[in-house]
Each structure stands twice: as structure tokens, then as C-alpha cells.
Image (cartoon, rainbow, N blue to C red; front, side, top):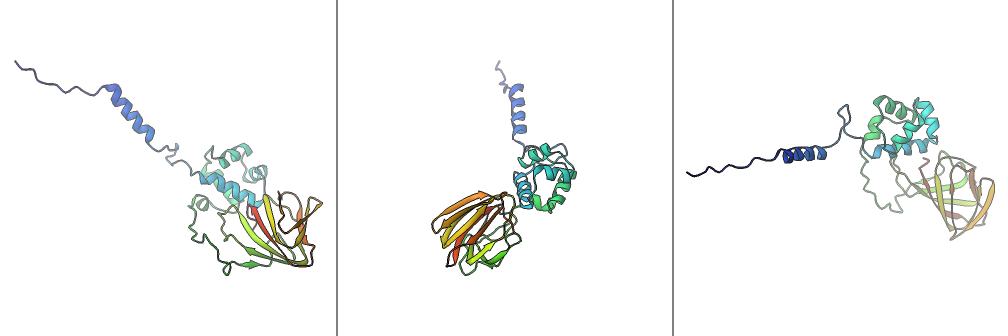
Length: 221
């Protein structure tokens, strides 16, 4: 009598492992069913706060939430509730939709010399004899601001203070920087950098126009 071949069944442990693996590969979700927050949310919040020039403590007080929680949110270690995010966005002058929006496409990788706008001043650097040639197209998503400062002889800026960091390279001429009350001379070929929280100003002390490549983060305008 021939024996009927029997196809062995799949071991229960293997089936269980397969189901577990499938669950491990599935996208994680919060308790309310929403997917994890995008990694860009934290840096967008921090960027908006720095542009506004306020500390974590100040933001926490205005948004009525804890400073430690805001720190975790900025570092993508915690997910804010809708109410918290709404209050924070309101203080920062933005909205939830903008915080979660994808970066806008900007095809201008190269800005032609004839196309770059020249500004007479900005909302911080008031002064005389100053023109600024914008190197980076304006966008609220950019973390850098780059300009070529054209400074007439004797021209200069008033002292300002804001959040961030700055670096410069003197292309032509000679300028005097006043950083936190200390004076520094910089000629063509010299570079400089400083924390923007320190009171700072500059002046063209030469007899010819000066040109300075100036980069700062975050943007101030």
C-alpha cells in the first residue's frame, strides 16, 4: 500500500516570525494614526526662532509650553501636539501648513551677475553709502544669507545685534569692524568672522570704495 505524501506544514514559529518581520517593516504611526513627523519640522522651527531672534526660553513663555519640550521638538526627539504646534507657529509668525510643506523648487543654482538685485539697505543694517548685492535668492527656507557689500568711502553701518553667526572676506578696499566695542582693521584679502549676538558695525576707512563678501546665518531679511 502506497503511502500518501503529505506536505509538511509551515512551522508556527516561522509563520510568527514572518508576521513579526512584516510589522517591523511597516511605517510607524502615532497613537492618533498620524505618521511620524518629517525630519524637517525640527530644523524649520529652530530656523524660524533664530530669524525672530528669540531664545528657547522666550519662545516657551510666549507659547505657554515647557522649554525642555521645545528643545526635544527642535531636535526631532518629540512630537508636538496640535495645540502646542499651533501656539508655537503663531509666536513664530508662521502656520502649521508652512511648517509641514515641502521645500519649494528653485532652479536658480547659478545667479547671473546681471540678474542679482542690489539693495540700498535692509531691516537691520541701516547706514549711509552702502549697497548690497544679493548672492542668494530670497526664500524663507534658506539657512544662509549672502551679499556683496559695496561701501563708499566714509560709509558704514550702525551697530546692530541679532541671532546667528557671520563671516566676511574683503574683496577690495579697507574697512574697520567694531565688534563688541573692539576695533579691527581688514584689508583686501583679509577675512573675519564673529557671533551676531555681539554688537557689530563696520565702516570704509579707505579713500576708495570697498567691496566685502558677507555671509550670515540665519538670514536677517
